[in-house]
Length: 516
Ligand code: KIV
Ligand code: ZN
Image 1 (cartoon, protein in one colour):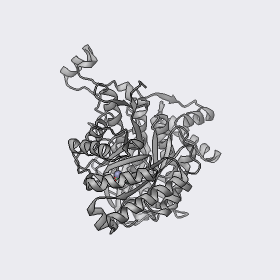
Image 2 (cartoon, protein in one colour):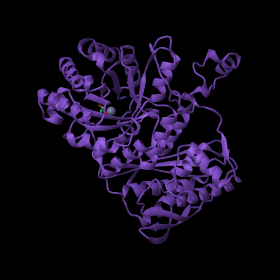
Image 3 (cartoon, helix red, strand yellow):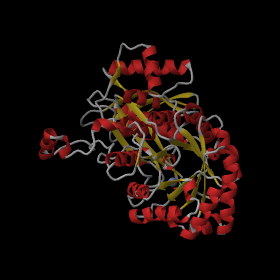
Image 4 (cartoon, helix red, strand yellow):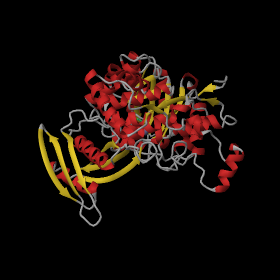
């Protein structure tokens, strides 16, 4: 780092990112992503909303235990029970932050909280004080600040800092602001709040108008020194500001920014792939920095220019963000120890020797089908263990599909369902359709299929296909993933993974919906 000020990168993939419908993650998946963020040297990892459910609590606690190099943060509404639960989940973190929030726009105060501004202010102060009983590092967010009255914002922020808040986060909760205005808002707050110099100003922008990154950067130019963002821009509705875009903008335009980030940017691509693999939300090909085409030059003129001098058409180096050739990590002859060591390097810690043995067997099967095994293959192999579906009720035991030109494809499946083996068959318009129909014949869920997509994990025709399936039932959306060198098998695994999630009861509270 130069002597420039530091821009704190606060990643909320595990909290706001997880609020995207269908992106929910298991405890193990959250720990893997947190370890990848830690390897990237992200400053703060918001691990979840502990009061939401016992599962959310355990996930935040597991991340707090697993991470040493980054501060681990838990979200809490401005109420005592949330703050106490967050403190409990974070108790074993090496460095812990409680992030408490309450809405300040008149529409939110009237329609959602049904509270007067003075009550909101008092509750904010009480909550920040309570959080300070547990940790020294307390963040306060006036939710929907982007649509709040500026005088009220100044008062509540001043009071929150007096009560002990060390970070003041300004959320554009509904993505309504535009850059000049949002930068202006942050600049005005820093000028008008008398004790503004006692806290770090942060921003948290949503992407409803496609302006989350632009708004965040305008705020940085106006003095914000923390940006809240997510990998691949995952998040509620249209998502949050994308971490990779914020970080690379600040790095690439050091001529403009008075601050710098202290991250290992070569970890961006591994992290992006990991989050996409776990959530099933693949970045679009033309997505900045991490999209498949971000560094591809198709037109002859561009290629010629890039070959003569990279700077003609490239402002960043692909390798600086981790776009290297897929690295062969293991092969058919690799032993159990090499396998375990590689998993550890990838931040994957299996809970027991039995899990390691099962994963190693799957690795050996894969190595029989596929010559080179890359990091991405291992990530998919672990995601696809069935570990992703704790308490799973359904498992694929056998699948055979017949497909030939001029004939209707037919699938035979054997499933394990609630402890019983069930065999069935069905025909369909294609092999995947036939396989799904055969599975439906055993588990009649009447879920609606909203999305089916296949991606190759690495290159080559022997690559594993990674399938994502999104299902909806009674307003609840879940996503399932499956990977295999045979894409029909990958599809069946993804479908079964989604059905398992749909069959789990949902008991988690959403931090921003309903009363405090
Ligand atoms: O968008 C938002 O306002 C939030 C808050 C909880 C910070 O996510
Ligand atoms: Zn948000």
